[in-house]
Length: 552
Image (cartoon, rainbow, N blue to C red; front, top):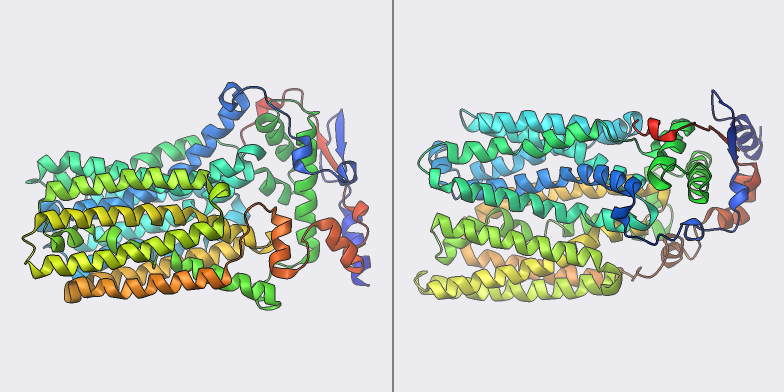
């Protein structure tokens, strides 16, 4: 049988997609919306979103999912804060060098073990359940960490934390992007990265609050156990959250997907054009992926455009963690001590101020990405980060020459670190957005997996090398990152085109000189795709009260 005949038979076999139809029915066909785009069918709301109950419910669940990154940020700042606590250092025999690097890397080892499994779990069980399961694992890790009896138990706890965080962390952006209301999708996804800094802020506050218990082990056990607070809260809420409508469609559970869209995107209106359009478009996109079979890893090497994308994906995975930021974030106490600020209380306050600055910058830059521009944002941020690192190197050398007696010079150095973090957090949200935008839909999940894996491998390298090099070479090690940042700026300038102001289909022209819309692909490859009007008709059950089935 020819390829076209096989495709036609596949489509004709799927005309009826609902197993049990209750009267009355609503029938959707993709051709009904021919020539329309999503913007054409979105209703014009006259009030702010929080005056619409269905959007309040939806965003409540989305924000609950984003708690995953708050937990991750809590951990990122927790170890930083614990290093400033005398009781923690004394209990674990003042870990430094490789021992300190092992504690930082234990969570990464757990994530690296979990990451290869997560895509299969999300495909089989959906987006909601992996979030719940990951949160439960994190709770176990937090208890182990807070009750640790020795160095090995503390490191094991961090491994467990990493395994759970990777599972819930991989499912969270999928859940948010696939469930968010169309006009709020960009805003909600922009909250994911700054949420990390919110968690870091809470950890900094808690470790500073327990500082007065510095002579007891409660000063570090309390923050460690409290790391399980947000996962407990999140798992309870997510048990009652709906499932992604796109995943439901991929499992041929169209009635449940229709119920989600009615309940959360149209406030119970089963005749909403938005709901009809979304369900038809989601189904068409998923069927197209099944027919085209263009989700192989080898696709990255087949064309010059995909090779260009692969270069950017790999580069961004390294850039996010290998720009000098990890050294200043995870080893800030060591850096401050080298600068002459050895007082634990002052170090915690500086850590807290740095976190507030990161939250403000991250949220602002994420929400203003369209005004700033991707390429220009990268270039400005990396250039200024290079300048700040050069200044930091000079200040560190000057401070060492006066044998760290000039405390004023040390505080100037802290100011330079703050400015560096402003520009880093200006750039960081762009890295996620840019990477997702440039990759075709069928390869987006693989690109995200590859990017995520490279970030953790780079951070693993950082956590082992940075403490050793910093202890051995002190300020001279900063010179290395000056050259790294300058090189990264040149890569952005030469290989990163501007994608702002363009739709996802238009971005494909930049890399492939072709559009990626289904209608145009059909015109180019009719022998493969057949007649676009032959895509299946979707039959779904009409519920008397769809609100009653909002929880999946």
